[in-house]
Length: 335
Image 1 (tube, rainbow, N blue to C red):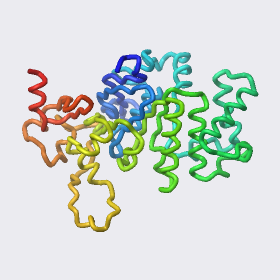
Image 2 (image 1 turned 90 degrees about the vertical axis):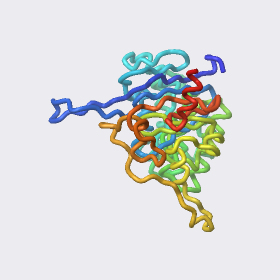
Image 3 (image 1 turned 135 degrees about the vertical axis):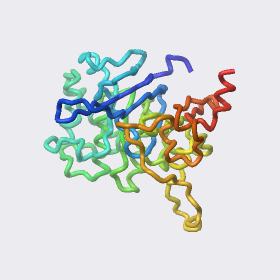
Image 4 (image 1 turned 60 degrees about the horizontal axis):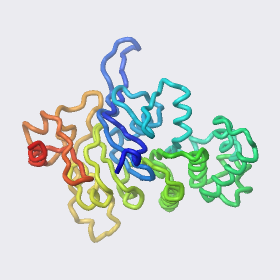
């Protein structure tokens, strides 16, 4: 693909948070995102997966401009994101929608649906009331909150959880963005509603050509939603591939562990052994040396994995993994 097809490029991104004792003495940093690089194409949906605490949400908020990168850069539509330029950030945020995890907490309880959707239009300078009303009605139609007139005067507490999340999505698309960042958008919803919300996001992506970054810890939902998967562990992306390739043939031991942790509804498979490594995720304040998964890895190579940071190995044109198990591929690529 050409550079014109790339909507978002993340280059060696680091987001660290300084820790101080008693408010004065610097004692270290939490390395919440620690060297992440990827590209997102126009109209593409990607999933960022990993267990809690791996840096997924911090990555999302840094892309949204809510956090300033410590190192590295983000390019959107070919322009470098400058979080210190207020005018540039306002223009950027008008092109990026955000779907939060908790829909009720994301909605102001003192505003009705009409005002919730009207506010971003007013803030971004759309002065004509008729045009704003038309955009609001179209957004509600798009998220299937119909009949529209039945919802315009309602407040968030009068909506079900699924309806609240549909309203959050309507607010995310009201400015006709190029990108939507969805941070665990279905984790607080009933199982029956989750499928509807994911199908809704997929339909909006296909209808309007929106790119989507879907943050989740649930690998069971990504098969039907994303074109590619990025697997995060210890603030780094350790494997990325097309969705079908990664789910059918995971290469990193941690990715295999994530897939083994997916519940199997078939009672006949209850006896099947699941290779899920013991231990806890690494501290992002004092991460282990070498590969950050090596203290839990069943295939660790002593003297290698615990000493040296693994390089990104290109196994296939669209399949990349950071693991010393594939050091022969590293030698072949450097030859």
